[in-house]
Length: 203
Image (cartoon, helix red, strand yellow):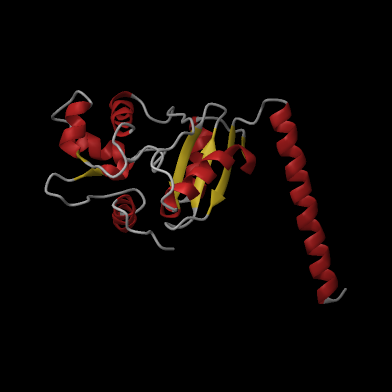
């Protein structure tokens, strides 16, 4: 068997695997056992992992957060029935494209915040009300979340936000005006803040 024949055979195997995967995905959806669907998308901030339950978007992970680790966490904390099923993520993918292109100021897709609880959940609720193009200090968010002294815990809640971008933790900055840390990296946070100030975010 020569090289081209091997390539064809391997290509045929790849298509067969893709076909089997699509059949499995359709069957899982039809039988209501697709608990977590995921896909990856390219963005100006690099590759993003998107995952959703039937409730809504449950996880967005930057490449630096390790997509495999994010999927393992979903399998452990939500359900082991996790499949690559891009269609369920079409809406959030489209809204992210519109956001990065400067045509969207808020996200309308439903979110599933089951990965956050307690004070972290209260912080995420506050974050959802920070308007596009505005910022709040960590101390301000702590006060709005009902625990004025829990400034450090606000930082932790932002760092562990399971759905960054859609729930805009990048709009929380330090009281001294510094942007502070971000799950996607300090540079990514700066670019998002620039985008919301009208500065185009390049690739």
